[in-house]
Image 1: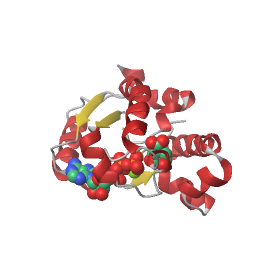
Image 2 (image 1 turned 120 degrees about the horizontal axis):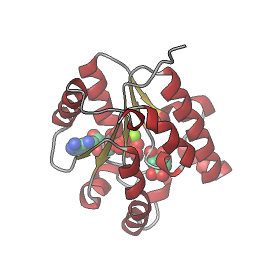
Image 3 (image 1 turned 30 degrees about the vertical axis):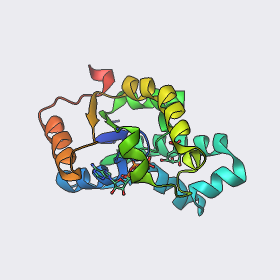
Image 4 (image 1 turned 135 degrees about the vertical axis):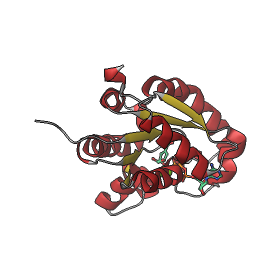
Length: 179
Ligand SMILES: Nc1ncnc2c1ncn2[C@@H]1O[C@H](COP(=O)(O)OP(=O)(O)OP(=O)(O)O)[C@@H](O)[C@H]1O
Ligand SMILES: O=C(O)C1=C[C@@H](O)[C@@H](O)[C@H](O)C1
Ligand SMILES: [Mg+2]
């Protein structure tokens, strides 16, 4: 049985542009974008912020992992992950079978992009200190799962999407399992 597989998966911290670049990349490739944050919210019928408040981060991570597995198995298109999805070891293992791009961003660019809205509950208090702590823990995880790292600080969304589409077309972006 040949399983359906995501075309490419975008990982990286909040504000890197996973959702925005993912949308443009999907348009270029003529496929759909599936954003696991949106999938979790739609299925739960409540915001991520409310899930964190009502049930805690661990519960959100379990819902997020299930959303990633569903997306990798059934969505033949672009998949944008939530910023912390790579913290789940089984998510990192599942990412071995698909091409993964790490969209990176500096704190100076990311915090103005995300603002301080409740949509990113982990950054609401002391955003600079929280950002640094999250990135110290996650940078190696993003690097572990990705076949390509793209810094998004100074490039427009359209250029970033084109760069990733071209890497895919040239066959430069292979699943880790196949390299
Ligand atoms: N390359 C870019 N240049 C300028 N602004 C950008 C760029 N990429 C994204 N943005 C802007 O930054 C904001 C955050 O982008 P986006 O929601 O795509 O990030 P994300 O990586 O999906 O974050 P999260 O992990 O919180 O879901 C949006 O307002 C978007 O328009
Ligand atoms: O960085 C994180 O841990 C998060 C990022 C967002 O995409 C959401 O998944 C949620 O706010 C948690
Ligand atoms: Mg997003």
